[in-house]
Image 1 (cartoon, one colour):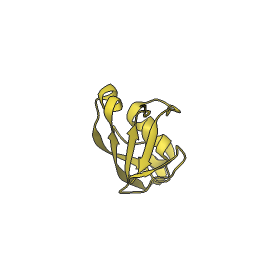
Image 2 (spheres, one colour):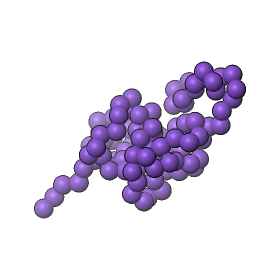
Image 3 (cartoon, rainbow, N blue to C red):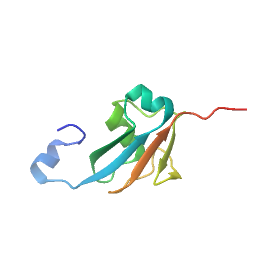
Image 4 (cartoon, rainbow, N blue to C red):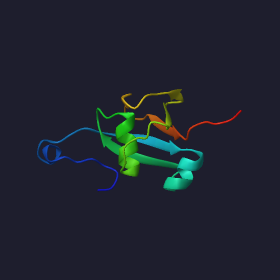
Length: 93
């Protein structure tokens, strides 16, 4: 099922899943053709796992991220109902 991590152990023992909302901004939205998406993940996942789920890639160091409108780190845990946002690097002068 797309958007869900299902390990072999979960198929036999059952696992708890959480629903979260993901938002991508600016060039990230254009690159991945996603501005917002609701996904389900196994409980206990991190912001980096959310990125991996929506892109299939490791989280680049240059990406900024937030959970519920507060800046976050790749290892920040996410909970059911959270909103996780990703932003491209900020430049300016």
